[in-house]
Image (cartoon, rainbow, N blue to C red; front, side, top):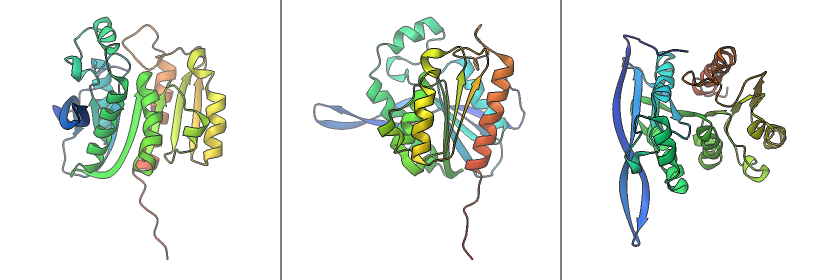
Length: 250
């Protein structure tokens, strides 16, 4: 999938309040950079947090956010590399910076970004999350941390949760895996069983002959057929669970 150009989509760089950081027993706010995009209209829309791989907010992730805006969502992609200067414009340099991060603090930043999205006045209050590789694992973690505040999650080849953590999930989960990505995909059967036990709506898709990172169209691992099918599952899932009207009695 290439980049989208769409005259009715507005995009801008944005900064949102990040998590609270603890220094010398004093809590202070800091800020995280990100990419915000939404259709250029006044309609209140559901929102989706887009969580990057272990290379920060690169052009591929920005493109994913734009695709969601074309599909009539508000999308926000935070940059987990903000504290070390942000995405440096080069994937290998970004990977090196990633190793320097405080993972616990970064997880708090993504949680703060999701709650900021949920509270935006131009949104409906319904928030989903999609993530890739590292970001897929964060989607699973957010499903535990946010409980019912996360309306739906789509982790792409993300590290699965323990059975104890999976039991806390309230959000519908649609997991995407590559058949050749045994390091991650081999964890699906246990996660499948745990989600069944948690009694939440979920699906798992394993794409034949697809590798880790098959959705990223900027790398040799890109698998066009798998990426297109997985993306359709993603949009269908978010449309089903983020746009659904609450049921009324009577």
